[in-house]
Image 1: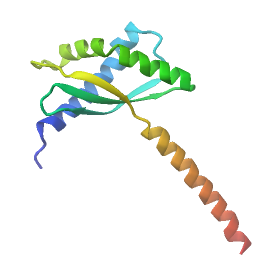
Image 2: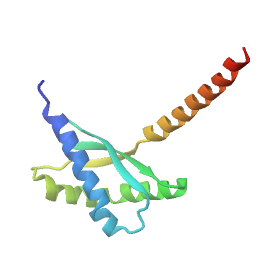
Image 3: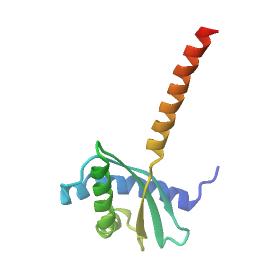
Image 4: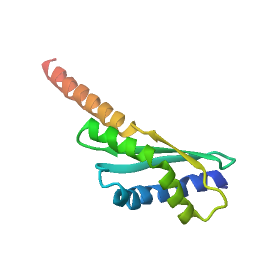
Length: 126
């Protein structure tokens, strides 16, 4: 199976940005709290832009929103750090998007388990 260049770059950018977020950015901004995870990256074929999908796990929604805001504000710093790591002629401009798929999945699991519990109770009555 042949893997395209952009898919290889997507995984490399995802890994490198995750290291930057959990390393040098946390050192630069100690107010970053919560568990930060890069769930995906999509680099444009012309290598000018990249969409980075980030999940932030925090106890409070306000902490999660503040952490995500700090990540967006420091996109230039992250791009600079990425240029040091990737050794490419151009480093794309980064657009950070919030990925809520894990929260949605947890919500759906809770609903399914509730349906399963309700279904067990009905089966015993019959």
